[in-house]
Image (cartoon, rainbow, N blue to C red; front, side):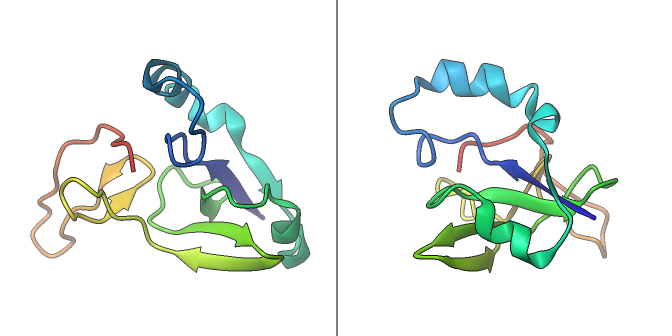
Length: 107
């Protein structure tokens, strides 16, 4: 089983103040949407990007969304830094064990 968690960003929620999104981001794990079958992905909210991960995982670097009735699987890059993002923050270098701060960044 997989889970989908909406990315709480102003791109996904343009009319929501950033302070509200930052507050809600602290409870992001409570927003997990279960994905039992591939077809369940088509029931995701149209035009909204979210994290896709195994249901028992804590972090992922895979995102997905539905646009025009098609599911898109993608990675997320911080527009300010150009660095790849994960659910928990910026993706570290597996070879060196180095990573950046673990705070969630607006995407």
